[in-house]
Length: 242
Image (tube, rainbow, N blue to C red; front, side, top):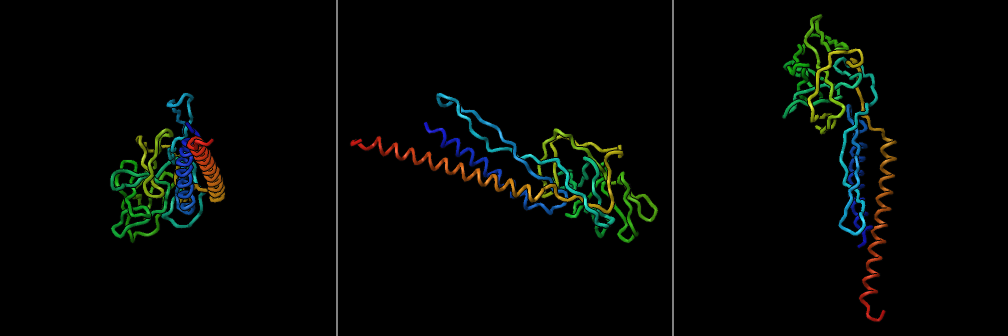
């Protein structure tokens, strides 16, 4: 049995997914709060043949926890998260967490994400400001002050390190384990007038893209060579004069 053919095909499936992941990271190098995707590969052993054969699995996408760079914007409704916390907003199907701190005030006063979803506090309640109430001040703890009155507090949440994350949109995530509200702001908090950028490094991602493309081409050459060997063997065995 020509195991190389099937091993090569499994490698191409895995590399194709890797290429798609890198391309998505490159496309989001300018997306605020975007966390890159990485692919976790495993080896699958087949005992169908006399000798075990190692195949490459298609791979599993994992959202990285690596932070992006923080940039000053001067916009009082922009907040960057310091530390490992996440901002929460009410999505269509439940709570979604994000590091994109570009906030806005809706005409009715609701504090929203840049995509128009309501930002919530640590108890899950929506926050409402006065659209004509003057300048907004946001403290490290997320407390919002307007006209010397404290309006509410933006919730800051901790997602367990071992939680699996599913992507929502470009910069939102939903964990498979409950997030908990952060009450200690000595290490975690908000920084008003700043925004976190994408964690995708364009040069690094392009380097990975070239490396994966070369690996894909090499695997393709392996498959072509294996197919050529099979054709020659069939021709030789099928020719009664040889």
